[in-house]
Image (spheres, rainbow, N blue to C red):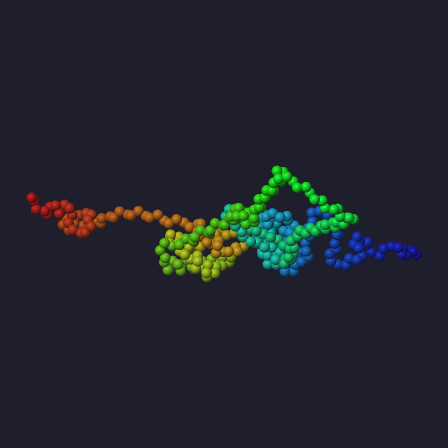
Length: 320
């Protein structure tokens, strides 16, 4: 009869510590000393965002400042399309992890300014410069016995020291401020085009075109005030012979992929810069004299009114 081996293990040994639960994920931790990013669990385990939004949030926070995180750049980096990436960026904006604003450069070009927040709603404390500690002056030690005062001999008048020259007063802050160059003010926007001859029917058509733009793109939703302000510019297009369908196609084609924060400003820019010139005046057509049939010989001839042809008129004149 074989002896029982009491030292044999009851099951196969694994590399997982006994403190790890038998089910679920088990972590093998490693301490990073370079090329790592600290991500809060409030983002990595967010319950309201999709997996694409979580991945974009973690990826953007790992990037250094200055890297382009536009929709097209992210679509070229990952397998997800522009629609999924745009939806993920909107979720990050909705929960405060991202902000995108449109700014105009001094050269007149519109750019998107993107700011990523690793802790939404946190107040960033600016570093303060510590104030220097005041230095204490040493206390003079009293002498044992004061020396008797001595009367100085009067100096001759010729050797009197000249009075010290007065130093020029330093320039005041207001004087320095006046020497600074004036701040550059942005150039005013060009005025909107206006029709040469106002027409009520044309104005109503222009208002209908502007109000219906949101059917083609929901981002082009305008208020009644914006419609009234831009209707005159659309009327100028219609006055120059542009069909309403062509005006609508010009305003809705090739729109930016980024969110449109001011659709009225975008439409005003297109209506102003893309305004076509008026059609040249067509040359006057020459007046054609109609054909007439002679009442006598029934021959055709050109004359402004019916009657006799020149030959019959000459035959009917009395001989001189």
